[in-house]
Image 1 (spheres, rainbow, N blue to C red):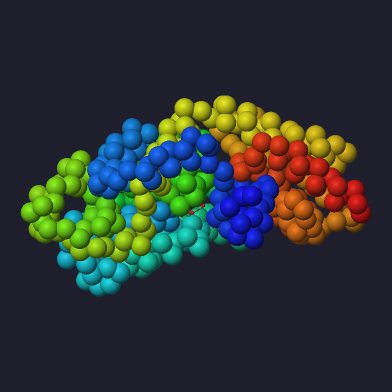
Image 2 (cartoon, rainbow, N blue to C red):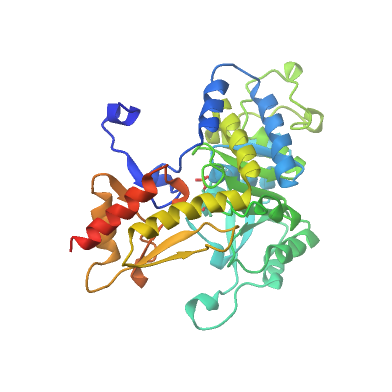
Length: 396
Ligand SMILES: *Cc1c(COP(=O)(O)O)cnc(C)c1O
């Protein structure tokens, strides 16, 4: 009996990918084992975060790093760090950022549901650019000069959501922002693979970058990485850690927190609700090491094999695999349905209510396409997924 049977909760075959609502992905046994081992001894959490900082710094090329309960949590912490710097009085007042640098400049076409995280820290978003390339009315999006135009003495940071389509290019944005002395905070939650992206945004000048631990990295679902400038990571740590301490008895690792730069010990900060336990921190670091050790080519080959298994079970249907030649991409099975026969919505609904329940990705349903993402499939599930889709389509 699995833990889920015990709770009366059904399990799913997750052919959609690392969605939070589907509980993310499957951790490798080494990661689960590391979490269990971590749970069996107590440590000083700041010392553990200092070790995380060193490992994240090696992996990303950033000066420092930190672990919190997700990329979203890391964005909240990063935003708070940009607002307060190392001032404990300001840290205490958040999310009321009145009188502080409380604005963040953001390209309008990058707005998304996750930007709640930075608003939660107290930032007001100043949108720039008219993305008429999306309206079909033109070809442009925000430009560097518009970001420059929106920066004032109230600007805490520029917030950038990394994606292949994002404009202007990050290097242009960091150049503009740095010329005005403003840091750039990057949401790169889902920008892995390719593995080179671990270093890319820092190399392009980002001051802070957030990655999800529970997506391609294969870490705990409730974990994320914040990597970047040492002073900003220190400000983030100070607003996240339990600081129920006496100043004269407090000796945090100086690589994470140089207490002599502070006028006093901050109180518990706005990031207190983004807690990551020792289990998540150790699990994430283990996953990060495994992710780097596996490499893009082997990971891609593993995913592609599952895609080919799904496609083979769907012989006779219109199936293509995208990203099959790009080892830095996640290969995806695209199934194009005959609109006379079954809609993508109906196929997805039938499969997710079936036995076993299989959840597909309906994101391209307007084009008559249903997709299978191999990232969260367990051994044997690619075959079952393909068979279940074929069974429903043949039952017509
Ligand atoms: C997934 C995602 C997040 C949130 O990441 P969590 O690790 O789940 O907190 C934020 N931004 C983007 C663009 C994402 O895709």
